[in-house]
Length: 324
Ligand SMILES: Nc1ncnc2c1ncn2[C@@H]1O[C@H](COP(=O)(O)OP(=O)(O)OP(=O)(O)O)[C@@H](O)[C@H]1O
Image (cartoon, rainbow, N blue to C red; front, top):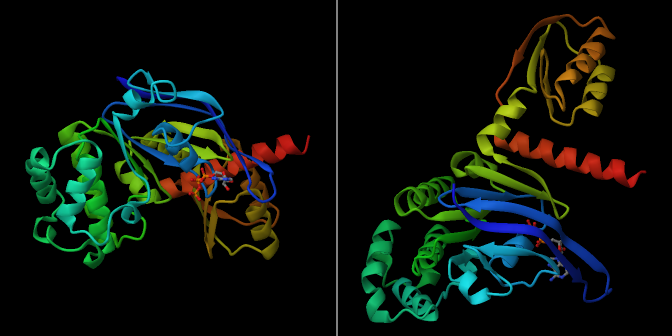
């Protein structure tokens, strides 16, 4: 696989305006992006995703580390590097609501130095692809949020760059439009050979379309794996216990204390263990009140559970380090 972006030991420190306090937003982030993949960049609020994305597309100067795009240093050879990238950072907020759909496309093409005449064919092609052809003369302000979001992505495709960065592409979209956007993104990669980086909180979209996930928490990478491998890894830790009598309150509290990801319904306990050995902890809790186990099954997990667990594990490490 050909590497198209290399992020190494990225660091960014902000100074808060009022208090002058320093905030380390990104703290030694490294990862690679390969041509033709959809990479999910994930993390809780304030994890450092936007800072990382802005550093990749040259909108922010990091305090340390480097970003190379197609071999070009995005700091030292900024113009060459960013030529390979377009970004949709704030979706529908970065397009002009008082211009029509087509005028927006012509305007942004012009911004990238492409003449109005030369881009007409490409605009038509994209309008058809995004199902916006019958809206081309309408003002953006009159479009639905989903249509505005599709237009923002279509605009990003105008300069025909290798890499597209999308910040929260499905934020605020209804389920149907979210599925439509997912399908369009998959097609962009499979038919046009693009590489996409998505920053999102939408875990179903990650499970559905991302090949790999880089998870950031507290400015550090806590996971960098293929999505299917992460799910498989956690599936080996996900168990469902069927018991013969309901648990006592004490047992429930003990299970909740040990396992953050757990669901207890009458005679069923679904739990994701942190390590396989933890099976014995549950057994002990059940044994403490002679609760009989009818059966133990492995269960399936979704990416949301995987994400929660990885963030939790990262926090545990931080707490353990902080308490030493
Ligand atoms: N301009 C700024 N000045 C000061 N602190 C900032 C600035 N931008 C971001 N931060 C801080 O840096 C940290 C990382 O922010 P960042 O926006 O990169 O996170 P994020 O993962 O994109 O979060 P979200 O999911 O909420 O968008 C946060 O603690 C944030 O408050």
